[in-house]
Image 1 (cartoon, rainbow, N blue to C red):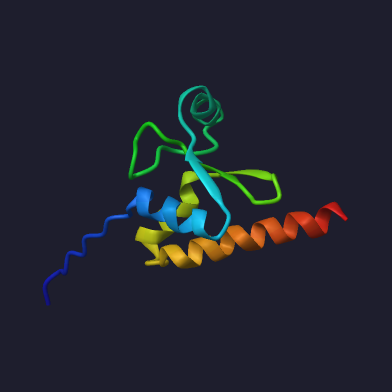
Image 2: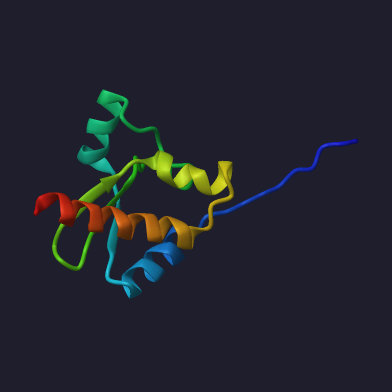
Length: 101
């Protein structure tokens, strides 16, 4: 039996627009912020943008969270739908709120 090739593309702009509809403001982690990740090797470059080392999320309550690029690689490695990634991000905010109490 031969091999099957599957090609996938993750549209960050579309993902950011969907996130904005549910109250999440997202930006790529680039520049000086990305340098920190490079030096500590906490995160590798994103497949969608080699200059980005993750995504910074601002929740509607003002809380900020930096997400490593590895979270978004699961879209390719495990075929996780982008909507599921958004649900994980929302759950992270809920967990942080409960931990702060």
